[in-house]
Length: 182
Image 1: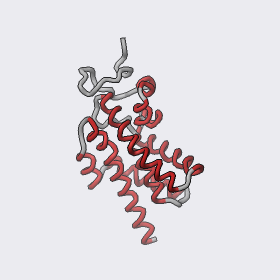
Image 2: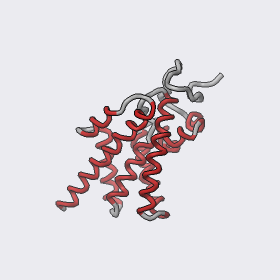
Image 3: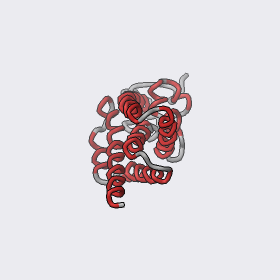
Image 4: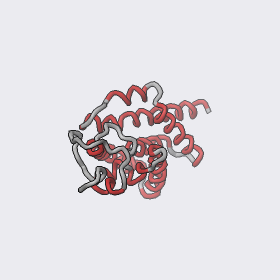
């Protein structure tokens, strides 16, 4: 007999939603590994924040090996692959926008850092705080974006990513205004 977290059913399954996936679920399908941020989304406390921290660390590592153009390509490819991974994982979890899916935070924060660099640790920390604020509080356009693409399938998978990209652009707007005046 399989445990609910081990199965990879569709959204039409009669099994209950998987709200707290474990390592077994993470390793069951490549999409799960990506969407759950290579395990960072398994955090029981603030998975979105933990995923964003993982994104920050991985971006710093990418920066050591890739020039800005190649990082831009990685972001585009990660968005497309993440769209697939988030779509599949949400269907398997039977939740339209599950909290443990953190690939959206990771790739959106990569976008913030990519467009706002160069900046030192304190600038990156401020960018992190701004992004987390907009992503968690969902003011104005972020709240609107969170409700535009709901459900399962490709539309819902895009919706998981879309509100985080809007949060990223809100954070970038604040950074741009701050740089303009100071």
